[in-house]
Image 1 (cartoon, rainbow, N blue to C red):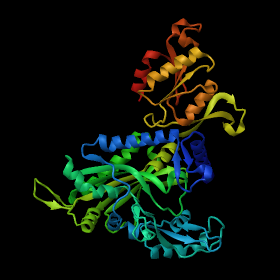
Image 2 (image 1 turned 45 degrees about the vertical axis):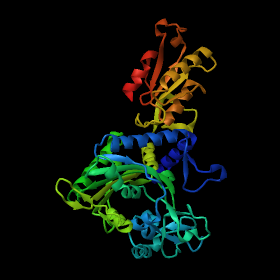
Image 3 (image 1 turned 180 degrees about the horizontal axis):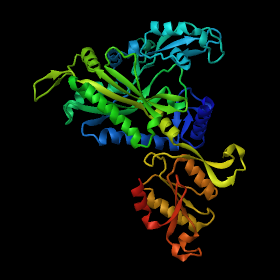
Image 4 (image 1 turned 180 degrees about the vertical axis):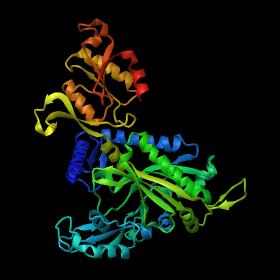
Length: 481
């Protein structure tokens, strides 16, 4: 089972590189560890994921508004939030080869849960109890230093040009939610919202991860999609349960199988939290956190009020009650969600056209196709348009005419490279739901003159083809999408 999972992961990574979804950053210089670039199809898929999330969390909700806070914030924001003193991972070093590893990851690999909120003492107690079971991932030796916590905030000298800038650094944000908390009062004062309400944001975050791994699952630069919901203290847990249900339904609505999702309750809560659950997805390397849903109490606003000196309580005009709102949140990474949808969509299918000439490209000895069965609304390209032959100008001209007609309405691709069968396989691998082929019948040059003005539309999932009038294409695809 582990070998199959590893094989699936390798196939997904290879597909991402081959078809332009994800590249290793600065690859021509040997790459930059745990930082990735999104190629032409990857950026379209990521944008579609963000659009789907935004529609679900903002457009469809009367009680949630959007925000785009700056990446850089006053350094005191991170002191108030606890990140300067407590945003850390446990690191140990192999005394033999000097590779540095995260101790919680080492423990996890032998089936022992080591929650990120454990103290350094608690982590070391677990580590020491299990040292004989843990080998260095590089050299195999079992000789490690004690675990030490290392802060994950990325420091910068923005606006400070002295040699002593490390004494008073600013930080690249480690999470997007702090920008929401410090703008809570601005949003409340400038918009129609009243408690209960939420603020949603999508933005880049940066973490100085010690051991980033598993492709785009854990990286040092990534995008977060977060929503913070502000409630009356007595309504916090009710809002929390509703948010859990709402977020689970989001994935079901986008076609994820329920059996690939599960809730995992945090056993070691931070002191201010009432409850926290991770929504886990069955990645090729097992069930891991996809999204976090947390009941955070009033800690965040109380801390920022204390450090800034600005009151962040709320006055209910109807009752006269004044209180500091409690917060429930949803947080998920764009890259992690993209990897989940790629995993869900990746399919290898045996075809009906007999044995393959390439034994490595077979399922049970038959030719296969690789297809990404992405939800149509997430597919990077919605429609591909082909001329049957690239060396026939009349076919190319008509295909480009159709392409120009459809591209204002859908993300389209014109493709005349290789034979039609190869083009279908290429579009299958990037998840294109429909392919349109212009042939000689389309121009009235075939034997059946009644087919003039029609094209072949091929469905990605069924591979079935149907003739359709060219003038009906826009209406047909509008219905489908």
